[in-house]
Image 1 (tube, rainbow, N blue to C red):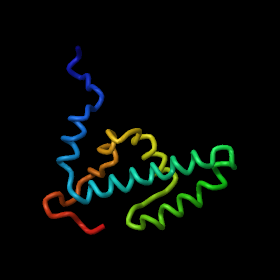
Image 2 (tube, one colour):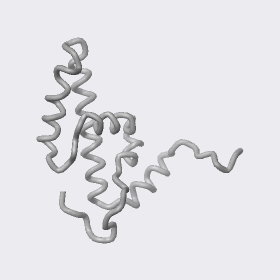
Image 3 (tube, one colour):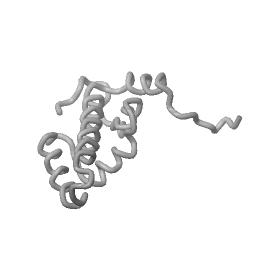
Image 4 (cartoon, rainbow, N blue to C red):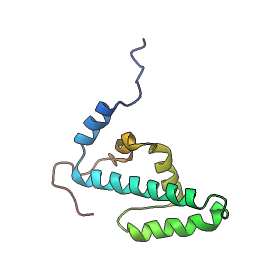
Length: 108
C-alpha cells in the first residue's frame, strides 16, 4: 500500500481531532451542524411544495437571525452540507484557521 494513502476518518480519528479543539471551536462546529440539520429538515418538509429559490433565502436569513454570531450564507451553508454527512463528520466543521488557541474559549 502506498505511504500516501489516507484512509477515511474513523471514529477514533474524529475523537482525537475534536479533543484538540478549543471550547469555542467546538461550540461553533455544533452550531454549524445544527444549521445543516435544520436546513435538511426544512428541505424535507417542503419537498414538492415550491421551488428551492422561493423559500431558501428566507430560511437562510432566519438561520442568520437565530445564530447572529455565525456567518451564514448560501455558499457557506452548501459547504457545510457537503462536509457534514453524519455525526462522525462534526470535526469537519471545526474552524482551525488559527487564532489564539492557548487562552480560554473566546466569547461567542
